[in-house]
Image (tube, rainbow, N blue to C red; front, top):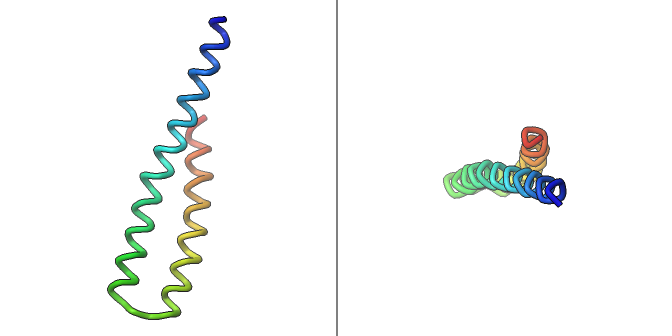
Length: 69
C-alpha cells in the first residue's frame, strides 16, 4: 500500500514538473515571436516564426522531460 502511494506521488511530481517547466518556457517563446510579428509585418517572417515556435516547443518539451527525472 505504501509502495503504491509513493510511486503515485513520484509520478505526480514528475508530471507536475514537466508541465510547469514546459508552459513557463513556451509562454516566453510564443510571446517573443508574437511581439516580433507585431513589430515587423512580413509574411515570410510569419512563416518562419511558426516553424520556429514548433521546433523550439519540441526542444523545450524534450528538455522538460529530461530534467524531470
